[in-house]
Length: 346
Image (tube, rainbow, N blue to C red; front, side, top):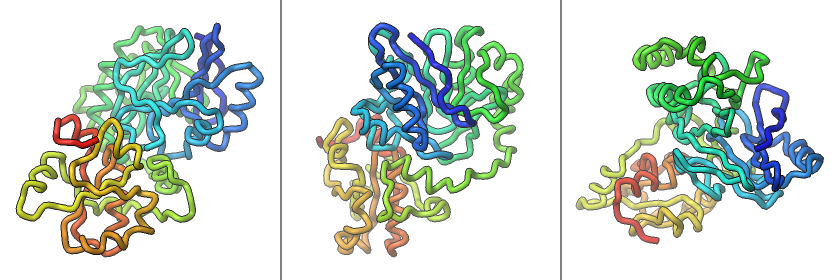
């Protein structure tokens, strides 16, 4: 496998690796404002973009993956718990992403986000925002979990050979790379700390939220980026009441079952995860214009549903804003519903 220098030359990192013989390449964590640079670089080196990988759902910059996927007619790959509907291939821990005659191993490393992965490519590992050089990614975003992050770093990343090169998705100090051995020995966030100590440390940190986080995060989660969709703010999102898959199932069997509103795209509704029997499909991008269709359900409990519980939280918050008071969200979405082996139709 052929490795190229980091492409952005900034705090956010984008990497390119390719199969030397077939010239097929995979681009990791592209930025939307650098798309022309990536296409020019690929053309100069006579590479064919075979795949794009987002290591997680980014909160601090618009992803370039959606536009690049369409421009290059290639595939977008993310973890199974990624919320966005534009993903062509979902991967899990231990899967391999084939690039020509080469491959990259997927390591599931949640904690920064529920869909965080790292990519192990021979002598190096691309760690996304889970493990940084001399630091770790924050764990205070929705779905973040410092305990999961500690486990992912110590049990999966630190299990790699000490000489493995570490390339994170961010660096703020001018570093280019580190090694697993260096991070195990001297990373001040995690080296020598127990799991409980690490959780306490991360809980004590008071990071400011990224600028315009909701303007960035929600389009990255939904692949909706237009002037017609007004996304809820963080306060509105935090109001949404979450129900587990088992709780929703129990309510479906009660005397007053909820109205089940699926807000995925039509292809997802009929796709691999299927849909809950009796659910009604109104895609998130159409919800505001079709809200009148829900008027007959105004006095009834409504449960919003999507792939992983992210877009549906947005939908529930939008319905709150429209005066619907008994709105809930299916926590972890159809991924968890399937994992619990609850009934689906396809």
